[in-house]
Image (cartoon, rainbow, N blue to C red):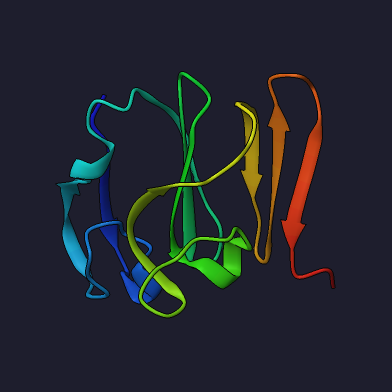
Length: 113
């Protein structure tokens, strides 16, 4: 499965290591061969789920509220989110993310506002 991205790169949310505008679709190479089955973006971050339950994130880490380490607040390329469980489903919002584990547990991270 290949993932393509384009548009406003502000916040690093395109996944190509840049914050520039990209008018043409490009392949997000870090997600090649990851068997991505779902992608969703919040305001300035993106999340992607693989078929085997691994969640990846990139963009402004403070917006997704996952503990991702990047260049300051920005994670420029898709990065595996360190979770102790496999993910069945997820949703990314403006300042929060929701995750459902394969065991049926629901987790929420966000700004708590």
